[in-house]
Amino acid sequence: MSSTRTTVKTATLEKERTGTVVPHLQRQLANAFVLYANDKHYHWQTFGPLFRDLHLMFDDFAGQVLGTIDELAERIRILGHDIPITELRQMQEAATVHSTRPGQTMREMLEEAHANSLAVIKEMHDAIDAATGANDPGTVDTFTRFIQIHEKQEWFLRQALQKRDGLTA
Ligand SMILES: [Fe+2]
Image (cartoon, rainbow, N blue to C red; front, side):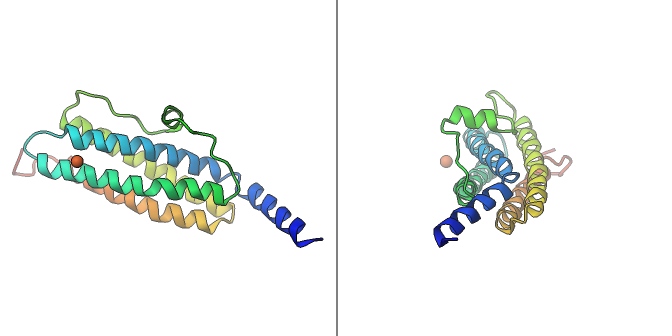
């Protein structure tokens, strides 16, 4: 067999092997777009006695999640698959996290961000399981690093939602 045919066959096998992983990457790519838009909305709409901390925290979150987008998309391409979604509207439809809405209190924004964070962590666990099953250590590594970003954000949000801190309530 020629080296070209061997290369094509190897690439085809890789594509088949990683087929179960790609939906996880696509879903988290879509989620990252929505979470970025949400975090920026919270950043802009923050108000109240904790304004400075929350305003800055949500901008940090937005930057962190934005930093995951390129790697998630390029991982799909590395595995030999296309990214059919081109429009932001399609990203929103493919996402499993909830898009935020205007007019919320700070607690509602924090609770919404926290619920989305927990959902992404659960899905990234599933993604790591799928990538492990597909013998795809590169994707395992991607999600193992990214889940820690979301676990840390979940921790921040969980603590910010604590009551009876003795300072503000
Ligand atoms: Fe800003």
